[in-house]
Image (cartoon, rainbow, N blue to C red; front, side):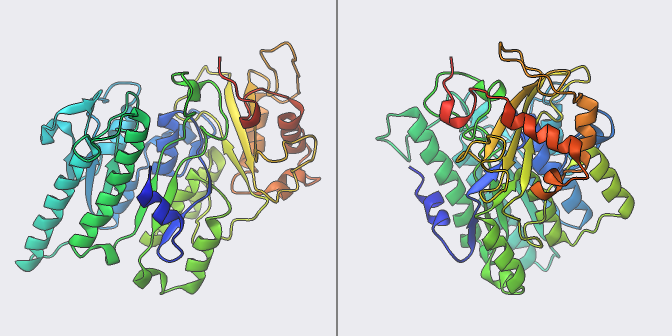
Length: 412
């Protein structure tokens, strides 16, 4: 169904597909914000402000890039609960293409055909080349694509796939073709060998179920496993064999969507000030630079509500992901093959709204103090004798038996 993605998956040269990627949430606002800012906020003040005021376009614009946004979804989110998405799709962009100015018909709810965005990208690249031929100085560019056809009720471009009858299959094929088109357009414009491409879905989905928005209420590996890939031209990767090796190695390790922001900032050679780094580490869970770091097999990654949560929210879902070689495996009853454990939390972490209640002396505030010491870390930090509170926290994930893990998931 997705031949181009399969091609990337089996490539061993310029394509990098991350087989064990995890997103921070099944909620789009949390998931996209983590990619845009590299921050999963620990609080509703400084952490949330940091996450909402940091975007990829802002950073690239500051570094002298021309910025362009392509959104197949209508940009009518300003002043709504999706206001952060509006900023992430429009702020600090020199050019914005959306149904409002393309005038393309809406074919998938409030979304136009993703494939139609390709012609606007192609035209923009041609205009850019004409300026270059006229002797006009052009800046490097940052192009961002936000595609919507993968959302219910799904859309299949019948002019491309006339014999597909399944909406889900047609949607997957249309998404795959949309990705392939970007690469083809870059190739035809002579830009592919100079361009780094990074793609990620915001979250996964429970295919085959009829539970709408179940990804907001019950989490499992399917929901928290996004598709993440990179394309790094050989002429760029050959400049540093170590960086290429690190990136290739990390395709098989546990990564988080929080890793994408620091990885992209590496190419801009942006060095955070000590004050900004300390502030971010204090108020956000952050990720690794996938180029500079070898992700340890015992890495831990986290998922929990971020910018989507309200100040008064004292309940929700939290997931802990651990690497395939983690010493947490088989300890305290962790699932052997899942690589993930989920808890529902209320005022007290581990206090469940089920008949099998387990209460642990760990409040939301204490949990935040634990998390501040566990960002960008591995299970050695959790199991260390100097963090007994963290050990109790992690034990709660294993002690509480929920039916929302992958091997038991059975939506109502």
